[in-house]
Length: 92
Image (cartoon, rainbow, N blue to C red; front, side, top):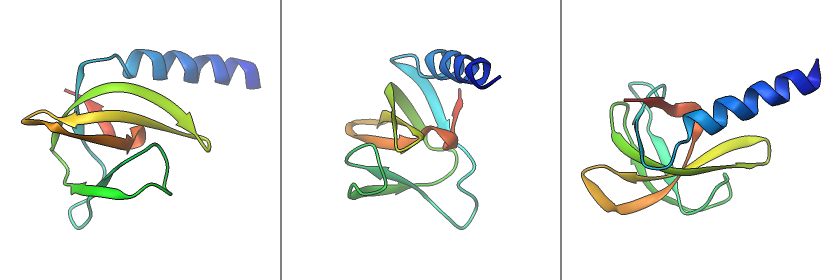
């Protein structure tokens, strides 16, 4: 059973983290921001907070400390890039 779940998770991550795919921030909430970080993990510095609805371009995803992190850039400002937790990204 555990290996079946691992395979399912791998497929979801692989299909959901296609390089260059569009994503939108969702689930941060009306009074919070998703933190764009310098690296994949909570110990990395915060670059900027992103509200729900922010359009991003997803680059690649990695797993660190049991959480999937995706390298992203702002769609309207591609020079601003970093990592966000994949849990807060939806396809657009």
